[in-house]
Each structure stands twice: as structure tokens, then as C-alpha cells.
Amino acid sequence: MALVTLFDKTFEPYLPEDLIQEKVQEMASVINKDYAGKKPLFIAILNGSFMFAADLFKRIELEAEISFIKLASYKGAKSTGNVVTAIGLDADIKGRDVVIIEDIIDTGKTLHEFIPQLLNQQPASLKTAVLLHKPDATKYPVRIDYCCFSIPDRFVLGYGLDYDGYGRNLKEIYQLKGGE
Ligand code: IMP
Ligand code: MG
Image (tube, rainbow, N blue to C red; front, side):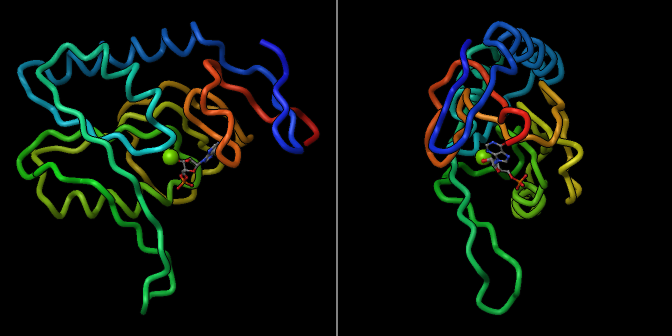
């Protein structure tokens, strides 16, 4: 693993591929146990979670479904804050055991705003499976049920996560180099 330079920034190796795969397997094993006998619906949030979602879902041994959504954030006409809407949520989640798959919880704002919308549709249960969590950056309360890595508040790249659209294809996770 060498340094990666994108635009003006340099990133250094942080989480190697085999460690990521090991943690994803551990998470899948726990979910397989927790949902034994159930038919959960996984909802992966694009774009960042696509690689994690694929690796996790391959290891799910339940009769499970997966659906992919995008979250679009726009300024509400009357409210001052942003409003998050889901694009592509065609599955009926009423009465389903839903597991949200997200790449990273940073401030927590995205899921903090989105989860209540899903709860409105009365799923039987709702849990979150996240690859990365930056606890020092999290300002909004968000439930995190399954998490692979708790990391410091530094920008990360790779394994689905991007910097201005690039770097998603890296197999490992890189971290912004110290001093930048
Ligand atoms: P939140 O709403 O602040 O929790 O932001 C979550 C979203 O911001 C994630 O789904 C990512 O797309 C993006 N994000 C936050 N931190 C990083 C990072 O370090 N690298 C790449 N994307 C990030
Ligand atoms: Mg994301």
C-alpha cells in the first residue's frame, strides 16, 4: 500500500484489505445469528456503501433482500434546515425487519434525519450496520447497532468512500496524511 494523491491531498494507508474483510465477516456472523429465522430487508445507502454492502451481503446466510437508495438533501421551502429524501425506495418496509447499511457516520445528520422517515412506515424493527464511525465528529444522536471500525475524526478514502468523486475503487481505506 503506497501513498495516494488526489487533487491537492495526500492519503496514507490506514485499514488494510484483509482487516476490513475480517471485520465485515464478523459483522455478518453476528447479523446471521441475530436474525436467525427472519427475512430481513437490507437498505444500502448509495454511493459510499456499495462495496461494503456487497461484501456484507455476500456473507449473509439468511433469506434476505437488499435494496439500494440514494439520499438527496435539499433546502426545505419553509424550514431552515435541509430535508433528506430517499430516491429509489420501492420496497414496502411495513412490518419488515430493516437493516440500514451505511458507509460512515460522521456528524450523524444524514441518518438522524432519515431514520424517522423510515420509522413512519412502521417496519417491525430497524437497525443500522455501519462500516465506520467517527465518534468525535458525531453531533446528532444516531443509533448504531453494528459497526466495523471506530475511527478518529480525519478524512478517509477508499473501499467505496470518495474524495470529490474519486478513490472509491481502492480496496483498502486510506486516511488523510498528518499535517494536511
Ligand atoms: P453525516 O451525515 O455527517 O454523518 O455524513 C455522512 C456522509 O458523509 C457519509 O455517508 C459519507 O458519504 C460522507 N463522509 C463523511 N465523512 C467522510 C470521510 O471521511 N470520507 C468520505 N466521505 C465521508
Ligand atoms: Mg454515504
